[in-house]
Length: 407
Image 1 (cartoon, one colour):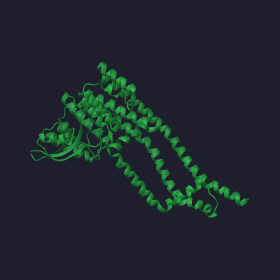
Image 2: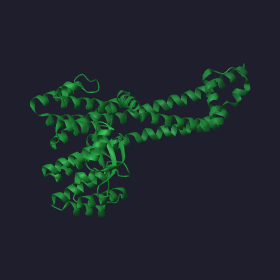
Image 3: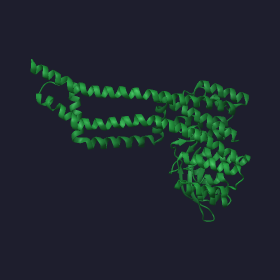
Image 4: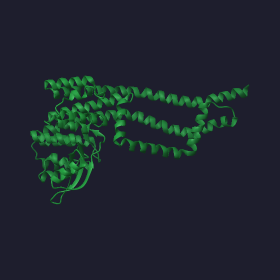
């Protein structure tokens, strides 16, 4: 099954947007036509950078940041708990929201709800801001009469994810700055400094070591064709992004992410927490298991895991257990598979998933702390090797030339 973003015209002439699920394009079109909608556009919903429950519950595009959605959920839950009518609560939030894209969305939601829509239906008109996970939880909250508790829970989860994302981002800022600085300094050295230092070596006509000849050749290329190098680098980056945006390219890229040294274990643990937290949350909200699995598959944020979970969802609908499908999957920890099996056998799957979420969330923090402590020495070693190699390539032939002249 695939998700489609659609834009259509209602029998009354109003323009509507939302999400429809179908096995093919034709089935999605048929569903919309059954609702007497005139289709304007129908586009397969693409995967993006996902954040939210367990790091994968919400999508925050279109200028709406994760922090804004956390505040939105929290404030709306507080007003709902205080028995403020939902339309009035949305109007209050509209006045308080500083983020212009979110303010516009809240205005549209208030008009939709005032026109008779449920909040979950109004949310579906903004698929770029609210994910399937968010919408499904709100729908479950409406059905159970506990919308304020659901929104509060969503805010709690997204706050934890925001803290984790901020921690990882903070950990990456230092190495990213150092790497960028190394590249800039390296270009300056190769274009302006190295030619001056190696001029005497070139003019001497002496046989130069391979390392020195490579350094001089690289310097000449950058000095004369730096624009071509920059263009080639930009082209390679654009080509890589285009490849990643293809289904096979995304699958390969996401598989490499979990197998990358140092970072691979962190990525794998993040996806695992997204799975356990999202599934336990949806089950706790009363969403049926197969439907919950399908939602989790679409918010997991990794094509390899998505394929695994979609296959598992199909098997669950046929009467199989989750554990039986993931037990021998190399991307799924065997210890977790056994815990899930116990949860399914005892009817305590939701509880066990929460326990696993708590354990592996702490594991993520440990991995991030270890990564932070490891990055600095690795960068220092790389810098030392790069600088040492450049110095050796210049000074060694200089010393040899001086000794030869002295002899």
